[in-house]
Image (cartoon, rainbow, N blue to C red; front, side, top):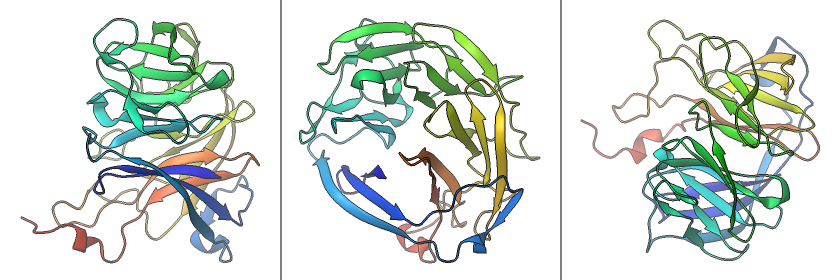
Amino acid sequence: MRFLSGCLSCGFALSIQALVAFTVQAQPLRRLSEASCPQCRVKVERLRTVGELASEPLEDWPFSVAMDSRGRIAVGIKGGKGMPRVTTDPSGPLVPLGREGAGPGEFIRPTTVAFGPGDTLHVFDLGSGRRTEFAPNGRVVRSSPYVGGSALVRVMGDGAALSVFAERRHRFHVLSRDAGTVRSFGAPTVAAQGRRQPSSLVSNVDAGRFWSVVGSTYQLEQWSVSGNRLTHWQRVSPWLSPDAPVSDGSRGVEPTAFVTDLRVDGLGRLWTIVNVPSASWRRGLGPVD
């Protein structure tokens, strides 16, 4: 499976890498211990570096990164603090897409980018509450209201979108390509006492199904886009404590481990990307107040 990783401290370079591993089919187990697959190994191989933006640094950390079938790459900036970046061809540099404003092809706070059917590029703008769809040649082909105000969105094969945002009754929402909510489902996650409402992550949609996980836990659920929960299981690991206080390490407290992304590959295997602090995590902090 190919994936993209970003490095902000090196002037921001995107690396296309490959994951090769022996994996186990997910089973509807209630609890899956850390030692359930001692023979599993993951090999990471860097395929190529897309480009560096030292001369035009990003305004903040990349929030979303997407790649189409032609190898073109799009990047959305955390908090929508800058215009999306896109490569015009697989080997080209990342260049800004659009400009600030409220007109066609203009953005106020664009955060999420995703490629859809026909390699169309979808940009979700939290500031204007609109989704803008670009053809591969960069032409704006559709602009529609984007309801819900979530930055976590997956575009499906028919152009509809799966959005995750917590409201009183549901957390998953299927949005039509033009506008409006088709259906909502999934009870909101419950926050532990003294902690903010945990957010759910979702994988890409494959064959009408997707996986979800709460980032601070390892409880995985598989859903159909029609709203049925198909299976669920809990991963138990000594390095992930759902009740641990949230920490980024800035105050000398060990950073919190959490799941950052989910992906389903072409063989239907589920991959989880997890941030786990190393034993030497303090070395990267510098002086701590």
